[in-house]
Every structure is written in C-alpha cells, then in structure tokens.
Length: 225
Image (cartoon, rainbow, N blue to C red; front, side):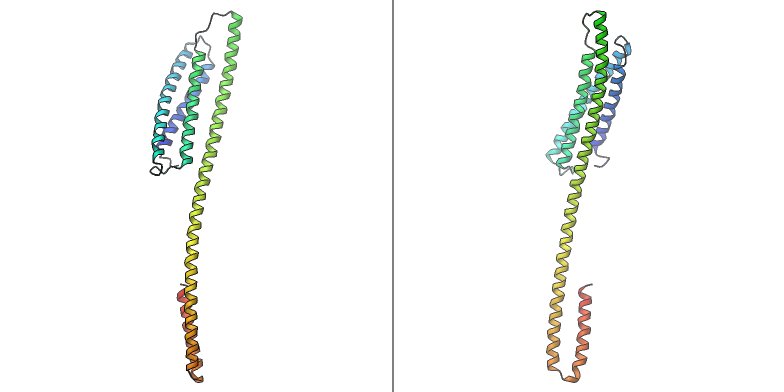
C-alpha cells in the first residue's frame, strides 16, 4: 500500500506508542514494589493504554466505513481483513498491559516475610513470562502480517497476469484476422492472374506473370505492415 495511506500513518504512530509502553512495562517489572518510580510508570502506562484504546476504536470505525465502499478507497477484501486483524491484535496487547498493571498494583494482603518473599519471586517469574509472551505475540503478529502481504502481492500479480493474457488473446485474434484477410486477397489475385493468362496470348503471358507476381509481393508487404 502507498506510504501516504492515512491508515498506515496512524498505524505506525500507534505501533511506536505500543513499543514505548512495552519498554516502560519492562522497566516497571524491574523495580521494587516500594520504589516511587514504579507508581509513576504504572500511571503513565495506564494513561497511554487508555489513549491507545480510543485511537484503535476510531481506527476500527474508519475501517468499517471504508468497507462499505472499498472500490472508492481501492481496498481489496484481503487488505480490509489484514487491517482488522492488526487492530484486534494490537488491542489485545493493550488490554494485556492494562490487566498486568491491575494485577501488579493491587493492594497486597497481610502476609508474613516468607510469603512476601514468595510473592516477590512469583512477581519476578510473571514478569519474565509477560516479556516472553509479549515477544512471542509480536513475532506472531509480524509473521501474520508478512503472510497477508504475500497473499495480497500474489493476488495482485495474478490479476496482472490475467489482464496480460487477455491483451495477448486480443492481439492474436487481430493477427488471425489480418492473416485471413491477406489470404483472401492472395486467392483473389491468383484467380485474376489465371483468368488473364487464359485470355492472353503466349507472348504476353510471361509479362503478365511477372506483373502479377510483383502485385502479389506488394499486397503481402502492405498486409503485414
């Protein structure tokens, strides 16, 4: 798709914001629960996720409107499906970050020191699992996008090949018509030559034959020009 397509411009902005929020989440998980910076990061990530959720809803509405008249925007069904899938996957990532924040910032219950240590170890494990999951989701989204773009390219190439075959078929039909026309002219010229030979004496036959051969050659040249 053209690089100036509004969808792809907004998509790039949203993707950059998602990447930035994921980096903040990694920083968030690396801090102790008592670190004041952790609360600030959680607040900024939550605000960013809310803003992304609104942008994704607006983008989803725009895609729905474009699907009502795809020819106007030069959109194929594959392209519309690709856009909806990207919006769904990105919304899932945003919701995942919000849910992780809700779990991580929930008030801790009254527990013993041993239990606190176990909770800290569990948080660390969950943090690692979250980062791994986000990485896997990002790779899967990229793989799906690559496959979708390949399908779109193949479909476009198939249509171009079909158009080329139609054009070649038209040229072949025109060539066939030209050949038929030339053959008809040659047959008519041969018939006239035979009649003239019968009507002419033996002294003029050779001259007529030469003249008619020249005429046939000229007709053939003009027919294939």
